Image 1 (cartoon, rainbow, N blue to C red):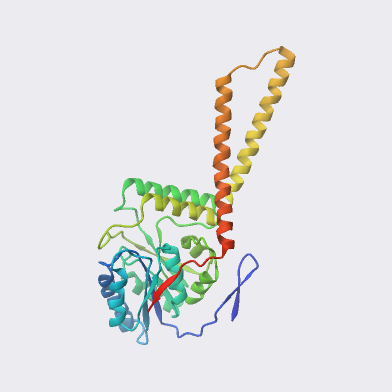
Image 2 (cartoon, rainbow, N blue to C red):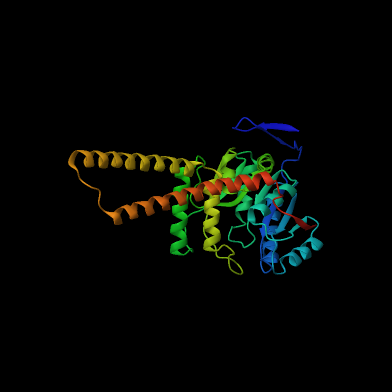
Amino acid sequence: MKHIKTSNKKECEIPCRFLDKGSVSIVVPCYNEEASISIFQNEIIKILTNIKDKINSNFEYEIIFIDDGSQDKTALEIKKLCNKFNNTHLIKFSRNFGKEAAILAGFRMAKNSSIVLIDVDLQHPVYLIEKMYEIWYSNEADIIYAIRKDRKGESFLKSRLSEIFYKISNIISDVKLKPGVSDFRLMDKKVVDILVAMNEYHRFSKAMFEWVGFKKIALEYDYAPRINGKTSWSYMKLFKYAVEGMISFSTTPLKISFWIGLMISFISGTYGIFIVFDTIINGNTVKGYPSMLTIILFLGGIQLIFLGIIGQYIARIYEQVKDRPHYIVEEEI
């Protein structure tokens, strides 16, 4: 084992793997994507064949599909590919555990010296893998990630909400996310080993990719529509994902609640002293029941909001200490 020290002075023990430089594992999370599997496989093999022909004649690869509890025939389609290709593998979850769990499962299975994370719907351009691999193979970077040039192709509401998320996240968190950054990337095995060693129950990979450091290079790409079906990401799921991201890598919401509470206490205390002196000196009686009721309701609302924020952090501690597995594997090929 070798030790890699992290910034919090703890050590992550990760396997020391002596792998030949040049192999790659393709990690592909899937959820209800039966119509996309074979198309994706054909496209990815073309790119991987080009890499072998143009860059590295000793190039080897494996493709790992993770079926995240799909309700359609996604697993069946992947099994067909596993029977046809020896270097294609399946991890089938017992139910839907979420994309973060699927990513972690793929990282744990990946055994090659570089790992590519990519979606199966081909919205991530597979041709970029060749450029990513070339950069990594020449030792120019440990992480090569894809970033969208713009938000074209998205609804106005989704585009604006995305901008708001990145702005707020970058204000309150020490981990800065680039707007438009995607999960699509190639990473050296040493990076993935550290990500796997981070045994957080609530994982937010976009921020984790930034937090680990290492030399990074970005490649821009244009938006492409899905080849089949509709996205499973509803606005509610995106909202929960955004909250997860902001809470996972920042304690700023807790600090904000403290300072706002302190400010309100100071203002109300000052106003209370003013009322006492005004009554004693001038004999004025306090009037304004509606305004007092409004203030009480306002403060009550603020308290409930901040109790909710504190509750989010406590809930994450509770779920972490239960130490339940991130996922359950029903079948593995």
